[in-house]
Length: 396
Image (cartoon, rainbow, N blue to C red; front, side):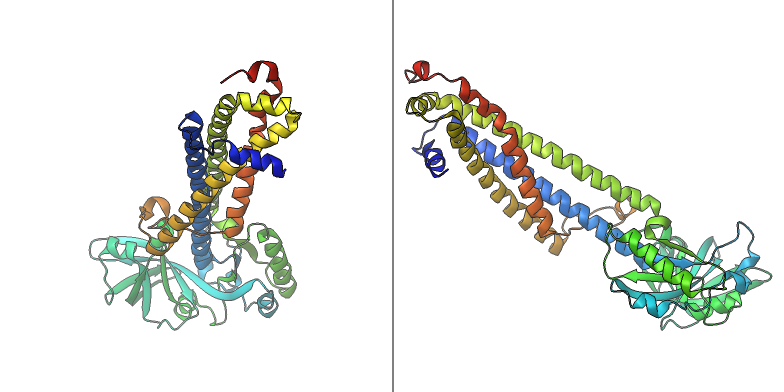
């Protein structure tokens, strides 16, 4: 193999200005651009997945233990049978290594009425330091109804009787998820439980937050938590154990489509690089036909000569991969820090292109690209076996 590398390094090392020199540059640039696009696509896909799963978990939890609601009617909201008692398995769930938090929340549908408009909303009560006379609305809802921080909003709640509450807007939030931003109002759980006629320790749901988001382990984690919940709630109404993947299927499908796009980009970029590398190898072969004839006349086997040109090709591919890796990582770090590429959050759920660099993914992409390109380059190398020394040595 050392001989193959030595000869490969001598090919095109004398400063020729022929086609092979230009072909080498084009091949290196092709590989560099391709791996750069692949690494950026993977990092962006991981960034979107991380951001979306974080946002979904923030609103609904990674796993959500909720009451089984009836098919219709609104009187259920005041009945204790449609709320959950304190989660008896809470300590067991918190003991799981991947669980970060178990949060009890309560819901109450209502309406916000202004002098000119009316908007249906869902109050989400959380255990926090939020005062009973205050709430948080999204910036989108605030713009829609003309609210500012410090204003008071009038809420109406319809049930067995109409209840009215005046709440001060303490602040505004943005999840970049349009359906949630236009619908949810965050307030005190004590306030919502009072509106529902529940005891303070009851809740509509328990949101279980994970320390990380693992696609592979999601189902097993959900099953394990469901087992603890059902075991700890014997004799009570069985709740529904679901998760962000179940409750926000549209977003999950969008993320899967994004992953499919990354796969297509990966295949296309490898194909483009391989095509340019094949052209480069053929040019090198044609320009070195006489050298191949000499090597054959000296007794070198076809397999050895193939190794020479594969070694030359490997050097070109590795150079392209190195350049592409550096450019891609620099770009990703700059975007991660400065967020200079912006997006419309109404279309992409986030205001900038998110980046999540995975070093293992970068290494895997490099190895896959190198292996795929080198495997494809075996095709033009078969041309070597058809070269006859008696004819090619005379070529100058």
